[in-house]
Image (cartoon, rainbow, N blue to C red):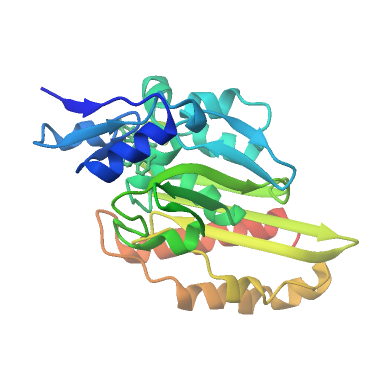
Length: 272
Ligand SMILES: Cc1cc2nc3c(=O)[nH]c(=O)nc-3n(C[C@H](O)[C@H](O)[C@H](O)COP(=O)(O)OP(=O)(O)OC[C@H]3O[C@@H](n4cnc5c(N)ncnc54)[C@H](O)[C@@H]3O)c2cc1C
């Protein structure tokens, strides 16, 4: 038997979360495979405040309990996020699985989290004590280690409204969308008057968290495409030194080689 509470408002949910030992439950697509446990759940998928997708002028605010299908159906969500989400599992899982659940599972394979890294997204975390906004990179402290207090809920994902238009995305899986990501890559480039104003590169399913190295990205920021081309070899070498894959089913050497090949393909695609 499954025990739990199903609040309909955020206020009620936060009060329950503060008062009891509860496990937040979105669509249950990760929790259900853990099997039956003697825990009490807080079902958060009926809370209206967590189901909205709104543009506040600065951020696209994606309600944490939005399912992948709802994200795909929204005209506001950028194409890059939709592309990654459309590659998650099969329709049944996308109808139930939520954005917060993908984050809360704490996996470096989570497909929507890769896009949140490359976008520089932030999370709005709320408890009865108040709220805080935490960059996604700071939220992940290690494998399954999240900066989430026992009484907090992930309530919204704050995605910068622009900057994701010029992207390159690849998910390398053994069985395409039905496979949990073996390796995933997202790169975005923002050019203004022929100058690289911003570049972001993220790798999923390689290490304990999604990887993004802002110091390496800075090598190309402020450069023209021609100048960036001259830095290309040093840029790739910097990633070669920085990426240190964890051991897994697929060898670390193979995954490092795939990472660098995807990076090269991104640079080729953008003429760098
Ligand atoms: C067959 C199958 C295929 C899959 N394929 C993929 C895939 O291709 N790519 C991929 O990325 N994932 C995949 N998954 C994993 C899973 O579907 C996703 O991680 C999904 O986003 C989980 O969302 P959920 O709402 O079901 O999470 P749940 O199972 O409800 O919760 C997951 C975790 O998040 C926590 N949580 C949920 N909501 C909140 C909240 N609001 N605040 C704080 N913590 C919260 C829960 O406590 C739990 O620890 C697959 C799963 C299955 C079963």
